[in-house]
Length: 105
Image 1 (spheres, helix red, strand yellow):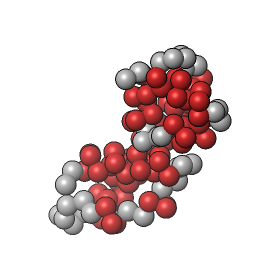
Image 2 (cartoon, one colour):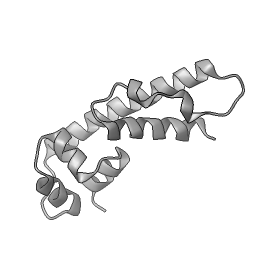
Image 3 (cartoon, rainbow, N blue to C red):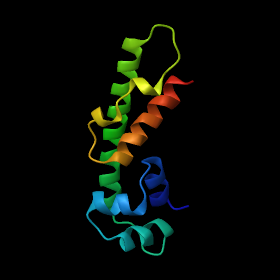
Image 4 (cartoon, one colour):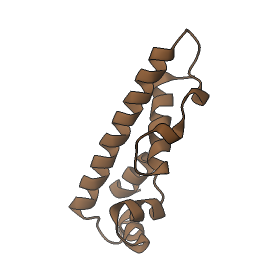
């Protein structure tokens, strides 16, 4: 697995999702993910920006859940994924997954 591929996985991004968010072709993403063509520095910088957005959204979810906490385990149904302010559904899933990992079952 390349570093670029690991970044995509961390953000729950498919090659198509990444191409859309980075405004490049799917072929470019596939080549960078496989190591056949190195990812450009700006691609990593953009993924880093997206990761920071996901982290902030996850922190917001965690804070909201802690505000609702009444001793009951985290219930994903109390999170409306549509309300997560991120530019792509995959990033919303990444934020929810991170929050669930932090809060636990």
